[in-house]
Length: 302
Length: 302
Image (cartoon, each protein chain N blue to C red):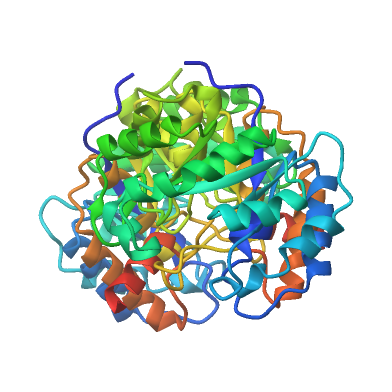
Protein backbone atom coordinates (compact mmCIF):
# COMPACT_ATOMS: atom_id res chain seq x y z
CA UNK A 1 0.00 0.00 0.00
CA UNK A 2 1.38 3.38 -1.00
CA UNK A 3 1.02 6.21 1.46
CA UNK A 4 -1.28 8.90 0.09
CA UNK A 5 0.41 12.08 -1.10
CA UNK A 6 -2.57 14.07 0.19
CA UNK A 7 -4.28 13.98 3.58
CA UNK A 8 -7.44 15.69 4.71
CA UNK A 9 -7.72 16.66 8.35
CA UNK A 10 -10.94 17.19 10.25
CA UNK A 11 -10.33 19.58 13.11
CA UNK A 12 -12.60 18.59 15.98
CA UNK A 13 -11.35 21.30 18.33
CA UNK A 14 -14.45 23.53 18.40
CA UNK A 15 -16.71 20.58 19.30
CA UNK A 16 -14.87 17.56 20.71
CA UNK A 17 -12.11 19.82 21.98
CA UNK A 18 -14.17 22.40 23.80
CA UNK A 19 -17.17 20.36 24.94
CA UNK A 20 -15.65 19.36 28.27
CA UNK A 21 -14.27 22.79 29.17
CA UNK A 22 -15.66 23.75 32.56
CA UNK A 23 -15.84 27.52 31.97
CA UNK A 24 -18.16 28.71 29.23
CA UNK A 25 -16.43 29.72 26.03
CA UNK A 26 -18.44 32.56 24.41
CA UNK A 27 -19.92 31.88 21.00
CA UNK A 28 -17.87 34.66 19.44
CA UNK A 29 -14.66 32.96 20.58
CA UNK A 30 -15.79 29.68 19.05
CA UNK A 31 -16.72 31.46 15.82
CA UNK A 32 -13.35 33.17 15.72
CA UNK A 33 -11.65 29.81 16.24
CA UNK A 34 -13.56 28.33 13.30
CA UNK A 35 -12.64 31.36 11.18
CA UNK A 36 -9.00 30.97 12.08
CA UNK A 37 -9.03 27.25 11.33
CA UNK A 38 -10.54 27.76 7.90
CA UNK A 39 -8.12 30.61 7.22
CA UNK A 40 -5.30 28.20 8.10
CA UNK A 41 -6.55 25.87 5.38
CA UNK A 42 -8.64 23.33 7.29
CA UNK A 43 -11.21 21.87 4.91
CA UNK A 44 -13.30 20.07 7.50
CA UNK A 45 -14.29 21.42 10.90
CA UNK A 46 -16.46 19.75 13.52
CA UNK A 47 -18.20 22.84 14.82
CA UNK A 48 -20.69 21.99 17.53
CA UNK A 49 -23.17 19.52 18.89
CA UNK A 50 -26.97 19.61 19.06
CA UNK A 51 -27.31 17.88 22.37
CA UNK A 52 -29.34 18.89 25.41
CA UNK A 53 -27.66 21.80 27.23
CA UNK A 54 -28.38 19.88 30.43
CA UNK A 55 -25.89 17.26 29.26
CA UNK A 56 -23.33 19.45 27.55
CA UNK A 57 -23.81 23.09 28.61
CA UNK A 58 -20.75 24.17 26.63
CA UNK A 59 -22.58 23.39 23.37
CA UNK A 60 -25.82 25.21 24.25
CA UNK A 61 -24.87 27.98 21.81
CA UNK A 62 -24.84 25.65 18.80
CA UNK A 63 -27.24 27.77 16.76
CA UNK A 64 -25.44 31.02 17.52
CA UNK A 65 -22.13 29.49 16.55
CA UNK A 66 -23.30 27.76 13.39
CA UNK A 67 -25.21 30.78 12.14
CA UNK A 68 -22.37 33.13 13.04
CA UNK A 69 -19.73 31.47 10.89
CA UNK A 70 -18.85 33.19 7.65
CA UNK A 71 -18.59 30.04 5.63
CA UNK A 72 -15.74 29.51 3.24
CA UNK A 73 -16.29 27.71 -0.05
CA UNK A 74 -14.92 24.18 -0.06
CA UNK A 75 -15.02 23.76 3.72
CA UNK A 76 -17.21 21.07 5.24
CA UNK A 77 -18.86 22.02 8.54
CA UNK A 78 -20.03 19.05 10.59
CA UNK A 79 -22.09 18.84 13.78
CA UNK A 80 -22.90 16.10 16.25
CA UNK A 81 -26.57 15.08 16.41
CA UNK A 82 -27.34 12.51 19.10
CA UNK A 83 -31.05 12.17 18.28
CA UNK A 84 -33.87 13.29 15.99
CA UNK A 85 -34.61 16.36 18.08
CA UNK A 86 -30.98 17.43 17.80
CA UNK A 87 -30.99 16.71 14.09
CA UNK A 88 -34.08 18.85 13.55
CA UNK A 89 -32.44 21.75 15.35
CA UNK A 90 -29.23 21.21 13.38
CA UNK A 91 -31.12 21.13 10.09
CA UNK A 92 -32.10 24.78 10.50
CA UNK A 93 -28.41 25.68 10.60
CA UNK A 94 -27.57 23.72 7.44
CA UNK A 95 -24.53 21.67 8.37
CA UNK A 96 -22.73 19.89 5.53
CA UNK A 97 -22.47 16.72 7.54
CA UNK A 98 -23.93 15.32 10.71
CA UNK A 99 -22.13 12.95 13.02
CA UNK A 100 -23.76 10.04 14.81
CA UNK A 101 -21.83 7.74 17.08
CA UNK A 102 -21.49 4.29 18.46
CA UNK A 103 -19.07 2.41 20.67
CA UNK A 104 -17.24 -0.79 19.83
CA UNK A 105 -17.47 -1.61 23.54
CA UNK A 106 -20.77 -2.81 25.04
CA UNK A 107 -19.75 -1.66 28.50
CA UNK A 108 -18.86 1.82 27.23
CA UNK A 109 -22.16 2.06 25.35
CA UNK A 110 -24.09 1.10 28.46
CA UNK A 111 -22.20 3.51 30.74
CA UNK A 112 -22.12 6.37 28.25
CA UNK A 113 -25.58 6.29 26.71
CA UNK A 114 -27.44 3.67 28.74
CA UNK A 115 -28.19 1.21 25.99
CA UNK A 116 -26.60 -1.59 24.02
CA UNK A 117 -24.61 -0.93 20.85
CA UNK A 118 -27.39 -2.39 18.71
CA UNK A 119 -30.02 -0.23 20.45
CA UNK A 120 -27.92 2.90 20.00
CA UNK A 121 -27.65 2.27 16.29
CA UNK A 122 -31.39 1.63 16.01
CA UNK A 123 -32.01 5.00 17.64
CA UNK A 124 -29.75 6.66 15.09
CA UNK A 125 -31.47 5.04 12.09
CA UNK A 126 -34.20 7.70 11.72
CA UNK A 127 -31.62 10.48 12.18
CA UNK A 128 -29.48 9.07 9.39
CA UNK A 129 -32.52 8.56 7.17
CA UNK A 130 -33.67 12.14 7.72
CA UNK A 131 -30.21 13.55 7.06
CA UNK A 132 -29.74 11.64 3.84
CA UNK A 133 -33.24 12.66 2.71
CA UNK A 134 -32.26 16.29 3.35
CA UNK A 135 -29.09 15.86 1.31
CA UNK A 136 -26.79 16.08 4.31
CA UNK A 137 -23.80 13.75 4.58
CA UNK A 138 -23.53 11.37 7.52
CA UNK A 139 -20.43 10.30 9.39
CA UNK A 140 -20.29 7.73 12.16
CA UNK A 141 -17.87 8.16 15.05
CA UNK A 142 -16.83 4.76 16.34
CA UNK A 143 -15.44 5.04 19.86
CA UNK A 144 -13.31 2.57 21.82
CA UNK A 145 -12.15 0.71 18.72
CA UNK A 146 -8.92 -0.37 20.41
CA UNK A 147 -9.54 -0.22 24.13
CA UNK A 148 -12.25 0.63 26.62
CA UNK A 149 -11.88 1.99 30.14
CA UNK A 150 -14.27 -0.74 31.42
CA UNK A 151 -13.57 -3.75 29.19
CA UNK A 152 -9.88 -3.30 28.40
CA UNK A 153 -8.82 -4.43 24.93
CA UNK A 154 -11.48 -4.50 22.23
CA UNK A 155 -11.38 -7.30 19.67
CA UNK A 156 -11.33 -6.24 16.00
CA UNK A 157 -14.50 -8.34 15.51
CA UNK A 158 -16.34 -5.87 17.73
CA UNK A 159 -15.19 -3.02 15.51
CA UNK A 160 -16.36 -4.92 12.42
CA UNK A 161 -19.71 -5.52 14.13
CA UNK A 162 -20.18 -1.82 14.86
CA UNK A 163 -19.05 -0.81 11.37
CA UNK A 164 -21.57 -3.26 9.91
CA UNK A 165 -24.40 -1.79 11.99
CA UNK A 166 -23.50 1.75 10.91
CA UNK A 167 -23.26 0.69 7.28
CA UNK A 168 -26.64 -0.99 7.68
CA UNK A 169 -28.41 2.26 8.60
CA UNK A 170 -26.77 4.21 5.79
CA UNK A 171 -23.85 5.95 7.49
CA UNK A 172 -21.54 6.99 4.66
CA UNK A 173 -18.17 7.08 6.37
CA UNK A 174 -16.73 6.30 9.78
CA UNK A 175 -14.07 7.39 12.25
CA UNK A 176 -11.93 4.71 13.84
CA UNK A 177 -11.36 6.31 17.23
CA UNK A 178 -8.92 5.25 19.91
CA UNK A 179 -10.92 7.12 22.53
CA UNK A 180 -8.66 6.45 25.49
CA UNK A 181 -5.40 6.52 23.57
CA UNK A 182 -4.21 3.05 24.55
CA UNK A 183 -3.65 1.93 20.97
CA UNK A 184 -0.33 1.13 19.36
CA UNK A 185 0.36 0.69 15.64
CA UNK A 186 -0.58 -2.95 15.06
CA UNK A 187 -3.71 -2.74 17.21
CA UNK A 188 -4.86 0.37 15.41
CA UNK A 189 -4.20 -1.30 12.06
CA UNK A 190 -6.33 -4.28 13.10
CA UNK A 191 -9.20 -1.95 14.06
CA UNK A 192 -8.93 -0.23 10.68
CA UNK A 193 -8.76 -3.53 8.82
CA UNK A 194 -11.89 -4.66 10.65
CA UNK A 195 -13.62 -1.46 9.54
CA UNK A 196 -12.53 -2.10 5.95
CA UNK A 197 -14.78 -5.18 5.88
CA UNK A 198 -17.69 -2.70 5.59
CA UNK A 199 -16.18 0.59 4.40
CA UNK A 200 -13.76 1.57 1.65
CA UNK A 201 -10.45 3.12 2.63
CA UNK A 202 -11.65 6.54 1.41
CA UNK A 203 -14.54 6.30 3.88
CA UNK A 204 -12.37 5.71 6.94
CA UNK A 205 -10.78 8.36 9.09
CA UNK A 206 -8.36 7.81 11.93
CA UNK A 207 -9.01 9.54 15.26
CA UNK A 208 -6.21 8.96 17.70
CA UNK A 209 -5.70 10.25 21.20
CA UNK A 210 -2.25 11.06 22.46
CA UNK A 211 -2.86 10.00 26.05
CA UNK A 212 0.05 7.55 25.98
CA UNK A 213 2.01 9.52 23.36
CA UNK A 214 1.16 7.00 20.62
CA UNK A 215 -1.01 9.10 18.31
CA UNK A 216 1.58 9.97 15.67
CA UNK A 217 2.98 6.44 15.54
CA UNK A 218 -0.61 5.27 15.07
CA UNK A 219 -1.13 7.90 12.39
CA UNK A 220 1.89 6.58 10.52
CA UNK A 221 0.55 3.03 10.87
CA UNK A 222 -2.82 4.14 9.48
CA UNK A 223 -1.16 6.02 6.62
CA UNK A 224 0.65 2.83 5.76
CA UNK A 225 -2.72 1.10 5.36
CA UNK A 226 -3.81 3.83 2.95
CA UNK A 227 -5.93 5.92 5.34
CA UNK A 228 -5.84 9.56 4.23
CA UNK A 229 -8.47 11.17 6.47
CA UNK A 230 -7.64 11.98 10.07
CA UNK A 231 -9.19 13.84 12.96
CA UNK A 232 -7.25 15.98 15.33
CA UNK A 233 -7.78 18.95 17.56
CA UNK A 234 -6.04 22.29 17.31
CA UNK A 235 -3.78 22.90 20.32
CA UNK A 236 -4.66 19.38 21.49
CA UNK A 237 -7.94 20.72 22.89
CA UNK A 238 -10.12 18.27 24.72
CA UNK A 239 -9.65 14.74 25.69
CA UNK A 240 -11.37 11.90 27.33
CA UNK A 241 -12.79 12.42 30.82
CA UNK A 242 -11.76 8.83 31.63
CA UNK A 243 -8.09 9.61 31.25
CA UNK A 244 -7.74 12.12 34.04
CA UNK A 245 -4.96 14.66 33.76
CA UNK A 246 -3.61 13.03 30.67
CA UNK A 247 -3.73 14.45 27.19
CA UNK A 248 -6.54 13.55 24.87
CA UNK A 249 -6.95 14.47 21.25
CA UNK A 250 -3.78 14.58 19.25
CA UNK A 251 -2.87 18.16 18.34
CA UNK A 252 -3.51 19.10 14.72
CA UNK A 253 -0.18 20.94 14.73
CA UNK A 254 1.71 17.73 15.53
CA UNK A 255 -0.11 15.80 12.80
CA UNK A 256 0.54 18.54 10.25
CA UNK A 257 4.23 18.62 11.20
CA UNK A 258 4.40 14.85 10.64
CA UNK A 259 2.59 14.96 7.32
CA UNK A 260 4.46 17.94 5.88
CA UNK A 261 7.73 16.39 6.99
CA UNK A 262 6.78 13.31 5.00
CA UNK A 263 6.01 15.42 1.94
CA UNK A 264 2.27 14.84 2.25
CA UNK A 265 0.05 17.76 1.28
CA UNK A 266 -2.66 18.97 3.63
CA UNK A 267 -3.44 22.44 2.29
CA UNK A 268 -2.77 23.73 5.80
CA UNK A 269 -0.52 26.66 6.70
CA UNK A 270 1.20 25.44 9.88
CA UNK A 271 2.06 28.95 11.07
CA UNK A 272 -1.54 30.11 10.83
CA UNK A 273 -2.69 26.90 12.48
CA UNK A 274 -0.32 27.53 15.37
CA UNK A 275 -1.74 31.04 15.68
CA UNK A 276 -5.26 29.60 15.84
CA UNK A 277 -4.10 27.27 18.61
CA UNK A 278 -2.47 30.14 20.50
CA UNK A 279 -5.66 32.18 20.14
CA UNK A 280 -7.88 29.58 21.81
CA UNK A 281 -5.20 28.55 24.32
CA UNK A 282 -4.73 32.18 25.38
CA UNK A 283 -8.46 32.43 25.92
CA UNK A 284 -8.41 29.26 28.04
CA UNK A 285 -5.40 30.53 29.98
CA UNK A 286 -3.00 27.79 29.04
CA UNK A 287 -0.33 26.82 26.52
CA UNK A 288 -1.13 24.84 23.37
CA UNK A 289 -0.88 21.12 24.16
CA UNK A 290 1.20 20.42 21.10
CA UNK A 291 4.89 19.63 21.01
CA UNK A 292 5.33 20.94 17.47
CA UNK A 293 3.54 24.17 18.35
CA UNK A 294 5.63 24.56 21.51
CA UNK A 295 8.88 24.00 19.63
CA UNK A 296 7.95 26.34 16.79
CA UNK A 297 6.71 29.06 19.15
CA UNK A 298 10.01 28.82 21.04
CA UNK A 299 11.88 29.01 17.76
CA UNK A 300 9.95 32.14 16.77
CA UNK A 301 10.91 33.71 20.08
CA UNK A 302 14.56 32.91 19.27
CA UNK B 1 11.78 -6.13 6.26
CA UNK B 2 10.20 -7.78 9.28
CA UNK B 3 10.02 -5.81 12.49
CA UNK B 4 12.21 -7.38 15.17
CA UNK B 5 10.37 -9.24 17.92
CA UNK B 6 12.98 -8.01 20.38
CA UNK B 7 14.31 -4.52 21.02
CA UNK B 8 17.16 -3.39 23.22
CA UNK B 9 16.96 0.04 24.78
CA UNK B 10 19.88 2.11 25.93
CA UNK B 11 18.75 4.47 28.66
CA UNK B 12 20.78 7.65 28.38
CA UNK B 13 19.03 9.41 31.27
CA UNK B 14 21.87 9.39 33.82
CA UNK B 15 24.29 10.97 31.29
CA UNK B 16 22.59 12.68 28.37
CA UNK B 17 19.52 13.29 30.47
CA UNK B 18 21.12 14.85 33.52
CA UNK B 19 24.15 16.60 32.02
CA UNK B 20 22.37 19.89 31.39
CA UNK B 21 20.59 20.07 34.75
CA UNK B 22 21.50 23.37 36.37
CA UNK B 23 21.41 22.19 40.01
CA UNK B 24 23.88 19.52 40.99
CA UNK B 25 22.43 16.04 41.31
CA UNK B 26 24.33 14.16 44.05
CA UNK B 27 26.25 11.05 43.02
CA UNK B 28 24.11 8.88 45.28
CA UNK B 29 20.98 9.97 43.44
CA UNK B 30 22.57 9.13 40.10
CA UNK B 31 23.67 5.75 41.44
CA UNK B 32 20.19 5.05 42.75
CA UNK B 33 18.77 5.97 39.35
CA UNK B 34 21.10 3.50 37.64
CA UNK B 35 20.16 0.83 40.19
CA UNK B 36 16.48 1.43 39.54
CA UNK B 37 16.95 1.32 35.79
CA UNK B 38 18.77 -1.98 35.90
CA UNK B 39 16.19 -3.36 38.33
CA UNK B 40 13.52 -2.37 35.80
CA UNK B 41 15.28 -4.52 33.22
CA UNK B 42 17.35 -2.02 31.25
CA UNK B 43 20.31 -3.89 29.73
CA UNK B 44 22.25 -0.84 28.59
CA UNK B 45 22.74 2.35 30.55
CA UNK B 46 24.75 5.42 29.56
CA UNK B 47 26.05 6.34 32.99
CA UNK B 48 28.29 9.37 32.86
CA UNK B 49 30.82 11.34 30.90
CA UNK B 50 34.57 11.86 31.41
CA UNK B 51 34.69 15.43 30.29
CA UNK B 52 36.28 18.43 31.95
CA UNK B 53 34.14 19.58 34.92
CA UNK B 54 34.69 23.11 33.61
CA UNK B 55 32.59 22.17 30.59
CA UNK B 56 30.06 19.87 32.21
CA UNK B 57 30.07 20.35 35.99
CA UNK B 58 27.15 17.94 36.42
CA UNK B 59 29.40 15.04 35.35
CA UNK B 60 32.34 15.92 37.63
CA UNK B 61 31.41 12.98 39.86
CA UNK B 62 31.92 10.39 37.09
CA UNK B 63 34.33 8.27 39.11
CA UNK B 64 32.17 8.30 42.23
CA UNK B 65 29.12 7.30 40.22
CA UNK B 66 30.78 4.59 38.16
CA UNK B 67 32.54 3.04 41.12
CA UNK B 68 29.42 3.28 43.27
CA UNK B 69 27.20 1.20 41.02
CA UNK B 70 26.52 -2.35 42.10
CA UNK B 71 26.76 -3.84 38.67
CA UNK B 72 24.26 -6.36 37.47
CA UNK B 73 25.34 -9.23 35.24
CA UNK B 74 24.30 -8.78 31.62
CA UNK B 75 24.02 -5.01 31.82
CA UNK B 76 26.27 -2.87 29.65
CA UNK B 77 27.46 0.38 31.27
CA UNK B 78 28.67 2.98 28.81
CA UNK B 79 30.37 6.33 29.32
CA UNK B 80 31.16 9.30 27.12
CA UNK B 81 34.87 9.96 26.52
CA UNK B 82 35.58 13.11 24.51
CA UNK B 83 39.37 12.70 24.45
CA UNK B 84 42.30 10.52 25.49
CA UNK B 85 42.53 12.13 28.91
CA UNK B 86 38.88 11.35 29.53
CA UNK B 87 39.34 7.83 28.25
CA UNK B 88 42.25 7.22 30.59
CA UNK B 89 40.17 8.36 33.54
CA UNK B 90 37.26 6.23 32.35
CA UNK B 91 39.49 3.18 31.96
CA UNK B 92 40.09 3.07 35.72
CA UNK B 93 36.33 2.67 36.22
CA UNK B 94 36.03 -0.17 33.72
CA UNK B 95 33.12 0.79 31.52
CA UNK B 96 31.80 -1.87 29.13
CA UNK B 97 31.63 0.61 26.30
CA UNK B 98 32.86 4.08 25.57
CA UNK B 99 31.04 6.58 23.42
CA UNK B 100 32.73 8.97 21.02
CA UNK B 101 30.79 11.40 18.90
CA UNK B 102 30.61 13.30 15.69
CA UNK B 103 28.16 15.54 13.94
CA UNK B 104 26.74 15.09 10.47
CA UNK B 105 26.63 18.89 10.28
CA UNK B 106 29.85 20.85 9.70
CA UNK B 107 28.36 23.98 11.26
CA UNK B 108 27.29 22.07 14.39
CA UNK B 109 30.74 20.49 14.68
CA UNK B 110 32.40 23.89 14.44
CA UNK B 111 30.07 25.54 16.95
CA UNK B 112 29.99 22.60 19.35
CA UNK B 113 33.59 21.42 19.40
CA UNK B 114 35.44 24.05 17.36
CA UNK B 115 36.71 21.83 14.59
CA UNK B 116 35.61 20.20 11.37
CA UNK B 117 33.93 16.80 11.29
CA UNK B 118 37.05 15.21 9.83
CA UNK B 119 39.27 16.78 12.50
CA UNK B 120 36.95 15.63 15.27
CA UNK B 121 37.14 12.06 14.04
CA UNK B 122 40.94 12.24 13.78
CA UNK B 123 41.06 13.34 17.42
CA UNK B 124 38.95 10.36 18.41
CA UNK B 125 41.12 7.85 16.52
CA UNK B 126 43.62 7.28 19.38
CA UNK B 127 40.75 7.04 21.90
CA UNK B 128 39.06 4.34 19.84
CA UNK B 129 42.37 2.53 19.34
CA UNK B 130 43.12 2.57 23.05
CA UNK B 131 39.64 1.37 23.96
CA UNK B 132 39.69 -1.52 21.52
CA UNK B 133 43.20 -2.47 22.74
CA UNK B 134 41.81 -2.54 26.29
CA UNK B 135 38.92 -4.77 25.19
CA UNK B 136 36.31 -2.05 25.63
CA UNK B 137 33.53 -1.69 23.07
CA UNK B 138 33.18 1.58 21.16
CA UNK B 139 30.00 3.28 20.07
CA UNK B 140 29.80 6.42 17.97
CA UNK B 141 27.05 8.97 18.58
CA UNK B 142 26.20 10.70 15.32
CA UNK B 143 24.40 13.98 16.00
CA UNK B 144 22.33 16.12 13.65
CA UNK B 145 21.68 13.28 11.21
CA UNK B 146 18.40 14.82 10.06
CA UNK B 147 18.60 18.51 10.87
CA UNK B 148 20.94 21.05 12.39
CA UNK B 149 20.07 24.25 14.25
CA UNK B 150 22.53 26.17 12.03
CA UNK B 151 22.36 24.42 8.65
CA UNK B 152 18.76 23.25 8.56
CA UNK B 153 18.19 19.93 6.78
CA UNK B 154 21.12 17.55 6.57
CA UNK B 155 21.56 15.48 3.42
CA UNK B 156 21.81 11.70 3.87
CA UNK B 157 25.19 11.86 2.08
CA UNK B 158 26.55 13.81 5.05
CA UNK B 159 25.39 11.04 7.37
CA UNK B 160 27.05 8.43 5.16
CA UNK B 161 30.25 10.51 5.19
CA UNK B 162 30.28 10.65 9.00
CA UNK B 163 29.46 6.95 9.33
CA UNK B 164 32.33 6.16 6.96
CA UNK B 165 34.77 8.23 9.04
CA UNK B 166 33.67 6.50 12.24
CA UNK B 167 33.93 3.08 10.61
CA UNK B 168 37.39 4.06 9.39
CA UNK B 169 38.73 4.60 12.91
CA UNK B 170 37.23 1.35 14.20
CA UNK B 171 34.00 2.47 15.86
CA UNK B 172 31.92 -0.69 16.19
CA UNK B 173 28.40 0.66 16.18
CA UNK B 174 26.68 4.00 15.80
CA UNK B 175 23.66 5.99 16.96
CA UNK B 176 21.62 7.81 14.36
CA UNK B 177 20.54 10.81 16.39
CA UNK B 178 17.95 13.40 15.51
CA UNK B 179 19.46 15.83 17.97
CA UNK B 180 16.96 18.64 17.54
CA UNK B 181 13.94 16.44 16.96
CA UNK B 182 12.98 17.88 13.58
CA UNK B 183 12.92 14.50 11.85
CA UNK B 184 9.88 12.75 10.46
CA UNK B 185 9.62 9.11 9.36
CA UNK B 186 10.97 9.24 5.81
CA UNK B 187 13.82 11.60 6.67
CA UNK B 188 14.85 9.42 9.57
CA UNK B 189 14.73 6.36 7.35
CA UNK B 190 16.99 8.06 4.81
CA UNK B 191 19.52 8.89 7.56
CA UNK B 192 19.46 5.25 8.68
CA UNK B 193 19.80 3.96 5.14
CA UNK B 194 22.81 6.24 4.65
CA UNK B 195 24.34 4.77 7.81
CA UNK B 196 23.72 1.26 6.50
CA UNK B 197 26.21 1.91 3.71
CA UNK B 198 28.89 1.47 6.41
CA UNK B 199 27.25 -0.38 9.27
CA UNK B 200 25.04 -3.47 9.56
CA UNK B 201 21.52 -3.06 10.87
CA UNK B 202 22.53 -4.73 14.17
CA UNK B 203 25.13 -2.00 14.65
CA UNK B 204 22.72 0.91 14.30
CA UNK B 205 20.66 2.43 17.07
CA UNK B 206 18.01 5.09 16.71
CA UNK B 207 18.14 8.12 18.98
CA UNK B 208 15.15 10.36 18.50
CA UNK B 209 14.15 13.52 20.27
CA UNK B 210 10.52 14.31 20.89
CA UNK B 211 10.84 18.07 20.47
CA UNK B 212 8.19 18.14 17.75
CA UNK B 213 6.35 15.06 19.05
CA UNK B 214 7.72 12.88 16.26
CA UNK B 215 9.93 10.46 18.19
CA UNK B 216 7.57 7.48 18.34
CA UNK B 217 6.53 7.81 14.71
CA UNK B 218 10.24 7.88 13.87
CA UNK B 219 10.80 4.85 16.09
CA UNK B 220 8.14 2.96 14.17
CA UNK B 221 9.75 4.02 10.88
CA UNK B 222 13.14 2.78 12.12
CA UNK B 223 11.63 -0.49 13.35
CA UNK B 224 10.23 -0.98 9.88
CA UNK B 225 13.77 -0.76 8.48
CA UNK B 226 14.86 -3.48 10.91
CA UNK B 227 16.50 -1.29 13.55
CA UNK B 228 16.20 -2.99 16.95
CA UNK B 229 18.41 -0.82 19.17
CA UNK B 230 17.12 2.50 20.44
CA UNK B 231 18.17 5.16 22.88
CA UNK B 232 15.79 6.95 25.14
CA UNK B 233 15.80 8.71 28.47
CA UNK B 234 13.79 7.73 31.52
CA UNK B 235 11.17 10.38 32.35
CA UNK B 236 12.24 12.20 29.17
CA UNK B 237 15.22 13.65 31.06
CA UNK B 238 17.39 16.07 29.18
CA UNK B 239 17.17 17.53 25.78
CA UNK B 240 18.96 19.80 23.46
CA UNK B 241 19.95 23.25 24.71
CA UNK B 242 19.20 24.58 21.20
CA UNK B 243 15.51 23.73 21.49
CA UNK B 244 14.64 26.02 24.34
CA UNK B 245 11.68 25.06 26.49
CA UNK B 246 10.81 22.18 24.26
CA UNK B 247 11.17 18.53 25.12
CA UNK B 248 14.27 16.67 24.18
CA UNK B 249 14.99 12.99 24.55
CA UNK B 250 12.05 10.71 24.00
CA UNK B 251 10.92 9.15 27.28
CA UNK B 252 11.87 5.50 27.71
CA UNK B 253 8.40 4.88 29.16
CA UNK B 254 6.74 6.04 25.93
CA UNK B 255 9.01 3.85 23.80
CA UNK B 256 8.40 0.82 26.02
CA UNK B 257 4.64 1.40 25.85
CA UNK B 258 4.87 1.46 22.04
CA UNK B 259 7.02 -1.65 21.83
CA UNK B 260 5.05 -3.74 24.32
CA UNK B 261 1.83 -2.68 22.61
CA UNK B 262 3.28 -4.04 19.38
CA UNK B 263 4.17 -7.33 21.06
CA UNK B 264 7.89 -6.57 20.95
CA UNK B 265 9.94 -7.81 23.90
CA UNK B 266 12.25 -5.45 25.75
CA UNK B 267 12.85 -7.27 29.04
CA UNK B 268 11.67 -4.10 30.78
CA UNK B 269 9.08 -3.91 33.55
CA UNK B 270 7.16 -0.75 32.67
CA UNK B 271 5.85 -0.25 36.20
CA UNK B 272 9.33 -0.35 37.70
CA UNK B 273 10.58 1.92 34.93
CA UNK B 274 7.86 4.45 35.74
CA UNK B 275 8.91 4.28 39.40
CA UNK B 276 12.50 5.00 38.38
CA UNK B 277 11.26 8.00 36.40
CA UNK B 278 9.18 9.23 39.33
CA UNK B 279 12.19 8.84 41.63
CA UNK B 280 14.45 11.12 39.58
CA UNK B 281 11.62 13.50 38.66
CA UNK B 282 10.70 13.90 42.32
CA UNK B 283 14.31 14.73 43.07
CA UNK B 284 14.32 17.33 40.29
CA UNK B 285 11.02 18.74 41.52
CA UNK B 286 8.99 18.07 38.41
CA UNK B 287 6.72 15.50 36.78
CA UNK B 288 8.04 12.81 34.44
CA UNK B 289 8.06 14.19 30.90
CA UNK B 290 6.38 11.10 29.50
CA UNK B 291 2.82 10.80 28.30
CA UNK B 292 2.65 7.05 28.98
CA UNK B 293 4.03 7.55 32.51
CA UNK B 294 1.59 10.40 33.15
CA UNK B 295 -1.38 8.34 31.94
CA UNK B 296 -0.37 5.26 33.90
CA UNK B 297 0.35 7.23 37.07
CA UNK B 298 -3.10 8.83 36.77
CA UNK B 299 -4.62 5.39 36.25
CA UNK B 300 -2.87 4.08 39.37
CA UNK B 301 -4.34 6.99 41.33
CA UNK B 302 -7.77 5.96 40.03
